[in-house]
Image (cartoon, rainbow, N blue to C red; front, side):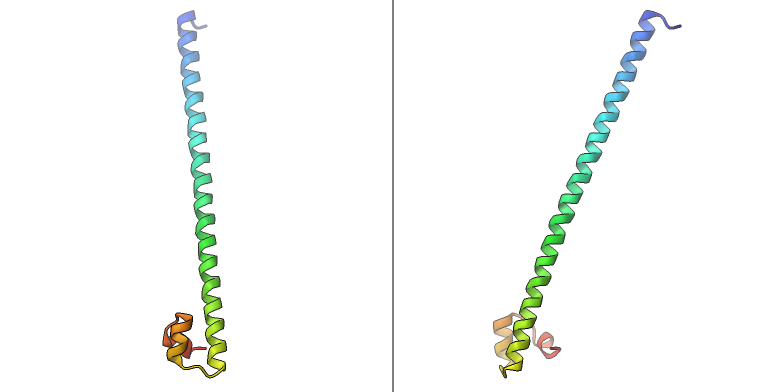
Length: 87
């Protein structure tokens, strides 16, 4: 059996440990949430960039099919001549 003073000291130590665990869990959960938010934002930005590129490639393809010069397509679509040649 513990003395009253030892029991109080033990209870305080347990309380500090529990608070420490709660804080650690909160920090971990916050870090995971931030990581997910960053990943989602990066994924969205990447998807939007891919969509814009596909749109520019489609415009360039149509211009090329309609006989526009490579120089004109470069100016309109913002692609390189090499990218346009591959279409």
